[in-house]
Length: 359
Image 1 (spheres, one colour):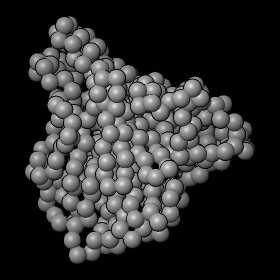
Image 2 (image 1 turned 90 degrees about the horizontal axis):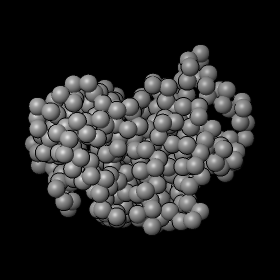
Image 3 (image 1 turned 90 degrees about the vertical axis):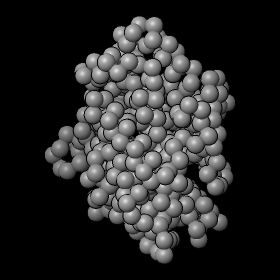
Image 4 (image 1 turned 45 degrees about the horizontal axis):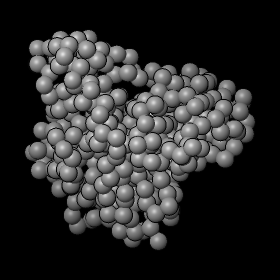
């Protein structure tokens, strides 16, 4: 019997996910995002990988067949830099392959002067060098980056999807879409940096280039599915599912949806949740930037009704905090909705779809 589980680690306002898959006596692991900064790696991700190594690879490094950086926001990339740099400097973890689209590869023809001018007013100012640093760390550790993808970018081809297999795991890349990226590049070139890429760099959260370029993929093992969304916007995710032939007239049913953009209402609505239904909704956030938003939780209820699914949250918030007050009010207003929270004494929550993880 095999296992297929999603573990959401305490990443504060960010994402740090582990996919467990493969046979019960020899599981394998994919890391998706690493939370903000080195602290999440040192306090949570690194120790968890150390536990897995002690159990499954005590005489050598823990082999990670794939690490995915969905996009270059600090709350996704920060801990991965530490992980990849450590893999080059120690024998504790060995990363075989990395998926990571750096901004400089998304806009390769952008003149440096214009790029710097656009970045000067953007939160990407710090994240672009972080993306460069992750590439450099992967090179130092001899890790294959975006292997098998054209132009060294993890992309869904125009009008389609890209499918890769990692052992028993089938990964279908739904976004970003090559057609949209090519159009963005052409407009950047035509307007000499003043067009959509420049606007997107300085745009709000749901329109920013780093979010629009999030790597979105469907992970499948046997009959089970989980959709990992980064900070992508709902309409982009629907487009990817449609191109993949997975969005029928009634939508699609999944086992797990990692709710995009930490539950921000800018990135989803009730129509999205009517089309993309799941047995388990996972939201990784701690109240910073008001994530998750009450309207997102209500949108799930409006789309699905009060029963038949679970909403999992990595943080509940301490008594008296805005997050805790909002969640308590939502629970009181929706008593039939099942909310599940990470035990605050544990570093993660876990959803087992096939077999039970006991390590």
